[in-house]
Length: 142
Image (cartoon, rainbow, N blue to C red; front, side):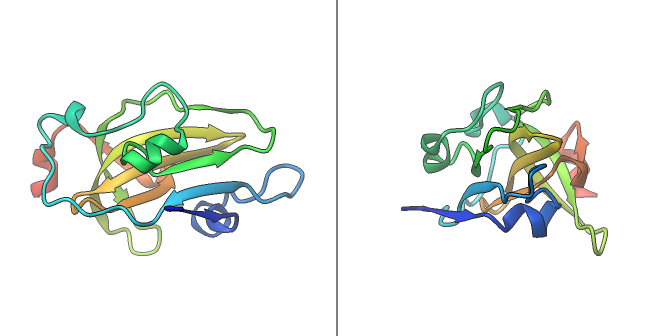
């Protein structure tokens, strides 16, 4: 199976690894996505993504999403954000800004989790609060 179940994932990455009862959330993350040479940043709609609904395992396997969540009974809904979108992922330790494409967004309880693609085609997952959205890929050049 292409996915790796990471119960500890959210706790260490974005501090969302436990629900109100203290149980670990189960998140499946695609860890074997092939990298892509280049994205057409002017035509984001051509980039596989999941908008307005929750991601499925099929979405992860096709590259349209980077994770699926077992919400364990918590409220689970898609985030009301523009997808796909351009953003900088800001490293919480160094403040380094890395350009990314937002391809997925979901809320589980109070946690807002976002699936991203780095410009080399690799996948990532982060908290919505770790992103700075931009309107144009021209911002990536500065």
